[in-house]
Length: 409
Ligand code: NIG
Ligand code: FE
Image (tube, rainbow, N blue to C red; front, side, top):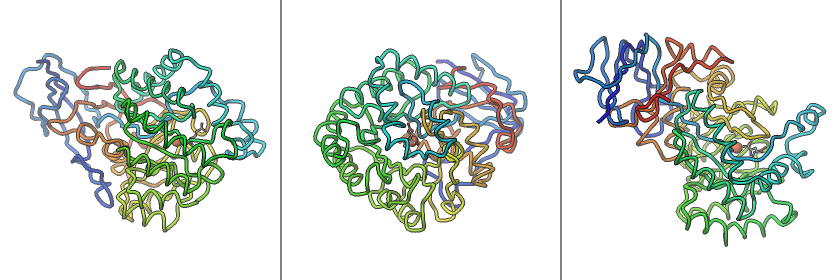
């Protein structure tokens, strides 16, 4: 048995409960002052407040020096594994080329597909591991990772194998999503229906049989996959027992968020262009809004209507969308700043949106996302007295110490 005591926590702040938090609950956090936390074998054993200390002796004691402690951040949306980079797109964008224009011309996602097909599994593993190290230093302790830069069986499997291996060897817990329907590959140009059929007949069953992912995702977007194709893909995924995710209403509102609600998708992502009908469908379907404000920032787009979604009773999560095109940043602390300034969410709502809500949207709500007895001891000691400071300061890494399963990492 190994034990760890964190003492002298100025403020311990956490959402409570293993469910996704919506409406006014989104902004409810437990705040304990002068707190301490005892960890036993990687799990939270006891939490005390108001200067009281757990009775048991501990093998290791950490002094939080009066700082803020929160649950480890849960990153709910990344494209972690990819070959190459796309810095060459920026001059094109600055001259006015749109994200979809670049994709239609064979660049964008398809450029990364080519480089990912060319990369070895070892190269992808080492590169992605570097990203995970950076994330961990920034306070992330659990992370979702999507495939989607292979668009053929072999490369999609290679990407998913990378995630599986990294999950075994890296402290961050990884949750895998199969994003076979990320774009129509060059071999299927003009034959989107046939590509979706390939996914349904061959690739989705293979991913299931080899236990390579828990969720399936589709880029439902104008000139990528339409609602009918997205429905076919997701219904097939559902029939194979996958949880459903949808990149919806990122650039054009073509009905992706309505489909998400209708199919009870666990989450719909982006939602920059969502309208009333989409929001109503998501609220009814119990679908979490996975909002990606750093992508809005990087693409120079609007910011999703986060406040309206909270008011409509949609659970809101915030994630980075880390990828080589629309968001080459994995800094969830910057996402917190954007949530505050651009979505006008409160610090409490934001904490919920980067902990328990994404945890629930990737099927880990019963293990992580809150600081409660029995949960995994994943937490961060911040160089800040409160969440307000974390929301306000930007551009620095305020994570002083990250603890994963009771270990300092
Ligand atoms: O979520 N929009 C689709 N997929 C990613 C971007 C992928 C890329 O540009 O490489 C996103 O923004
Ligand atoms: Fe994405």
